[in-house]
Length: 178
Length: 116
Image (tube, rainbow over all chains, first blue to last red):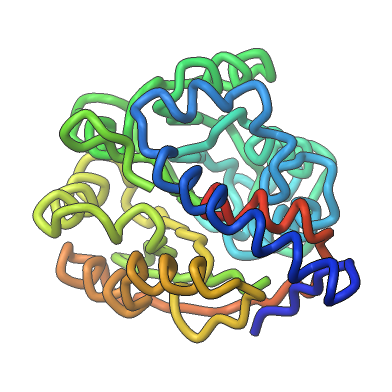
């Protein structure tokens, strides 16, 4: 299933792995503070899984467009059927909004087949600093964890709700959950 | 790098569940969250998509301590599907996509230290 390949000679890899093991374990344990994601907000997009311009994210955006069946253009003539009218989307745990921005951009550029256009995008994100970055991208944002957000009635309902590689949406007992 | 898509339907809703969010959360809260989303946040005919990395049957190049940590924290992938069904979603579907990649060792170790 996984095809990760480490680019380093085996001997070097083993030496470095042994010296970093303790560090890695300690850092993983320490990452559960409630301010963790605020603290990493400025470097979030340097992380391998979240770098906006990486090949992985380009691949992911295309997979998401297919899975959500969105990415079509905003064409009034195609708004009669539920399947291809412009849709509202919420990205829960959307971080800095780079995925939402990429999906929106793909939608504005026109889509394939019966893919629907995106009418609007909302990012729900517990980290205020990350939400601010999403807002700077022109996205509507809500600063909240998933449980609190889900339990609030009276707000808008969405045609698509996305949970993408979310590891810290829910705050319990004052600790972020990874 | 394996990435799991779980697709779930309710009145033509589509939903993909994620285990990363869920596996440390008390079951009551998880179910309540999904039920609330279904009732308060999703349009009739809407779809939910959850994307996560598989928790089981992985072949990441972990060192022993990381393997042990991963196994301690892993929750069976099927639990998420079951949670969604119990919350009222129907026609839950899953699919796994594979992304082959090469990662420099230092960066990989940093990723492991941050639980990927």
